[in-house]
Amino acid sequence: MEPHYTRSNTARKVLGLELNITKRDQLYEVDAKSKRQEYVKSGIYRRAFWDEFNLSFHRPKKDACGKCEQYENATGAEKGSLQEEYRQHICRKTKAREEKEHNKATIDYKMSL
Image (cartoon, rainbow, N blue to C red; front, side, top):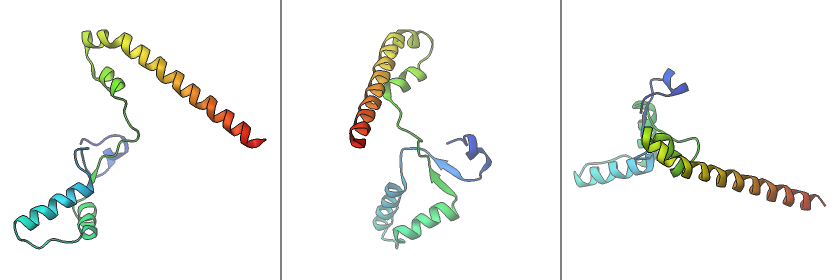
Protein backbone atom coordinates (compact mmCIF):
# COMPACT_ATOMS: atom_id res chain seq x y z
CA MET A 1 0.00 0.00 0.00
CA GLU A 2 1.06 3.58 -0.54
CA PRO A 3 2.05 5.48 2.62
CA HIS A 4 -0.86 7.40 4.11
CA TYR A 5 -0.84 10.25 6.65
CA THR A 6 1.67 9.36 9.39
CA ARG A 7 2.93 6.34 7.45
CA SER A 8 4.25 8.73 4.80
CA ASN A 9 7.20 9.53 7.08
CA THR A 10 8.33 5.95 7.55
CA ALA A 11 10.42 3.46 5.61
CA ARG A 12 8.16 0.60 6.72
CA LYS A 13 6.36 -1.13 3.88
CA VAL A 14 2.67 -1.74 4.53
CA LEU A 15 1.05 -4.76 2.90
CA GLY A 16 -2.64 -4.92 1.97
CA LEU A 17 -5.56 -6.64 3.68
CA GLU A 18 -5.34 -9.89 1.70
CA LEU A 19 -3.09 -11.51 4.29
CA ASN A 20 -2.20 -11.16 7.93
CA ILE A 21 0.90 -12.26 9.82
CA THR A 22 -0.69 -15.56 10.92
CA LYS A 23 -1.68 -16.55 7.39
CA ARG A 24 1.70 -15.43 6.06
CA ASP A 25 3.49 -17.52 8.70
CA GLN A 26 1.38 -20.57 7.81
CA LEU A 27 2.12 -20.14 4.11
CA TYR A 28 5.84 -19.88 4.89
CA GLU A 29 5.72 -23.07 6.97
CA VAL A 30 3.78 -25.02 4.30
CA ASP A 31 6.20 -23.83 1.60
CA ALA A 32 9.25 -24.82 3.65
CA LYS A 33 7.77 -28.25 4.41
CA SER A 34 6.93 -28.86 0.74
CA LYS A 35 10.55 -28.06 -0.16
CA ARG A 36 11.75 -30.19 2.76
CA GLN A 37 13.55 -27.20 4.20
CA GLU A 38 13.94 -26.25 7.82
CA TYR A 39 11.80 -23.36 8.98
CA VAL A 40 11.86 -21.07 11.99
CA LYS A 41 9.19 -20.90 14.67
CA SER A 42 6.41 -18.36 14.47
CA GLY A 43 7.93 -15.86 16.95
CA ILE A 44 11.23 -15.71 15.11
CA TYR A 45 9.44 -15.39 11.77
CA ARG A 46 7.35 -12.51 13.08
CA ARG A 47 10.35 -10.69 14.53
CA ALA A 48 12.24 -11.00 11.23
CA PHE A 49 9.15 -9.96 9.27
CA TRP A 50 8.67 -6.78 11.30
CA ASP A 51 12.21 -5.85 12.30
CA GLU A 52 14.54 -7.11 9.58
CA PHE A 53 12.28 -6.75 6.54
CA ASN A 54 10.48 -3.71 8.01
CA LEU A 55 7.05 -4.96 6.89
CA SER A 56 3.61 -4.74 8.45
CA PHE A 57 0.00 -5.28 7.43
CA HIS A 58 -2.57 -2.54 7.00
CA ARG A 59 -5.14 -2.57 9.76
CA PRO A 60 -8.24 -0.50 9.09
CA LYS A 61 -9.16 1.87 11.91
CA LYS A 62 -12.79 0.81 11.74
CA ASP A 63 -15.01 -1.51 9.78
CA ALA A 64 -16.29 -0.11 6.53
CA CYS A 65 -19.94 -0.45 5.62
CA GLY A 66 -20.47 -2.11 2.24
CA LYS A 67 -23.21 0.29 1.15
CA CYS A 68 -21.21 3.37 2.18
CA GLU A 69 -18.10 2.04 0.40
CA GLN A 70 -20.12 1.30 -2.74
CA TYR A 71 -21.54 4.83 -2.78
CA GLU A 72 -18.21 6.52 -2.03
CA ASN A 73 -16.44 4.54 -4.78
CA ALA A 74 -19.18 5.12 -7.38
CA THR A 75 -18.69 7.61 -10.18
CA GLY A 76 -21.00 10.05 -11.97
CA ALA A 77 -24.24 8.42 -13.17
CA GLU A 78 -23.61 5.38 -11.00
CA LYS A 79 -23.53 7.60 -7.91
CA GLY A 80 -26.74 9.33 -9.00
CA SER A 81 -28.61 6.02 -9.24
CA LEU A 82 -27.38 5.01 -5.78
CA GLN A 83 -28.16 8.34 -4.14
CA GLU A 84 -31.69 7.61 -2.86
CA GLU A 85 -30.76 4.17 -1.55
CA TYR A 86 -27.69 5.70 0.16
CA ARG A 87 -29.81 8.49 1.72
CA GLN A 88 -32.23 5.90 3.16
CA HIS A 89 -29.30 3.85 4.41
CA ILE A 90 -27.84 6.86 6.24
CA CYS A 91 -31.26 7.62 7.78
CA ARG A 92 -31.56 4.03 9.07
CA LYS A 93 -27.99 4.14 10.37
CA THR A 94 -28.63 7.43 12.20
CA LYS A 95 -31.88 6.14 13.70
CA ALA A 96 -30.21 2.91 14.89
CA ARG A 97 -27.37 4.90 16.47
CA GLU A 98 -29.84 7.19 18.26
CA GLU A 99 -31.81 4.18 19.52
CA LYS A 100 -28.65 2.56 20.78
CA GLU A 101 -27.66 5.73 22.67
CA HIS A 102 -31.18 6.04 24.11
CA ASN A 103 -31.12 2.42 25.32
CA LYS A 104 -27.66 2.91 26.83
CA ALA A 105 -28.82 6.04 28.65
CA THR A 106 -31.90 4.18 29.96
CA ILE A 107 -29.76 1.30 31.25
CA ASP A 108 -27.28 3.71 32.86
CA TYR A 109 -30.14 5.56 34.56
CA LYS A 110 -31.70 2.33 35.89
CA MET A 111 -28.34 1.15 37.20
CA SER A 112 -27.85 4.43 39.08
CA LEU A 113 -31.08 3.94 41.06
